[in-house]
Length: 183
Image (cartoon, rainbow, N blue to C red; front, top):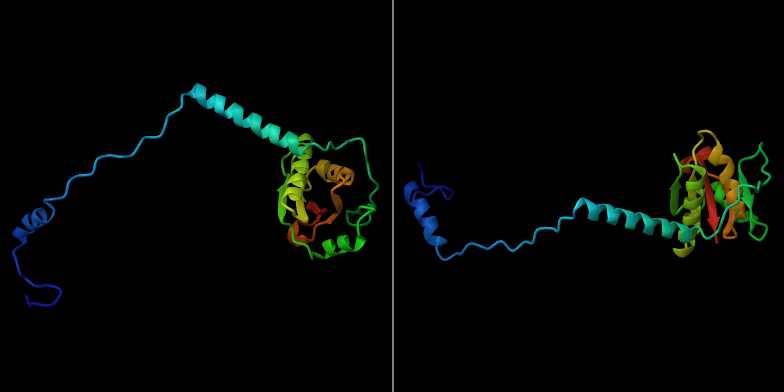
């Protein structure tokens, strides 16, 4: 074999383990310094889960301080796309919403939700939008049995923070979603 810069024969292969040991003879092994995670019993786990569920329910209830009524029904023209403008709001804003000028900052997908759950989620969405100064949100209700599609507009009309809404453009869900303006 030729002596190349990558392979020079300076010592025999049998000397390598001894050289390695000599280089690291002053090194001391490291002691285990990690603390194992605390293990909870199943009783403690169930108590924590119940506490988390209670906290979540309390948060949703606080966000749903505004109660939606199922008895109220607004009038919507069935021949037109679903839309609403609060009398105190500028109708031009809803037109801009229809054109897609306002992309939604928050999206709520209600597929698979029952009416009571959907009410809480919508109230929480409006609360979060106001808290985070979000102007446009999307509520995806789906088509399904039309239960939510019929109820959601009636609920939104009742909330004072809703400036208006319009059926979403195709890129945001089309007939299965609403874009909502929040003040």
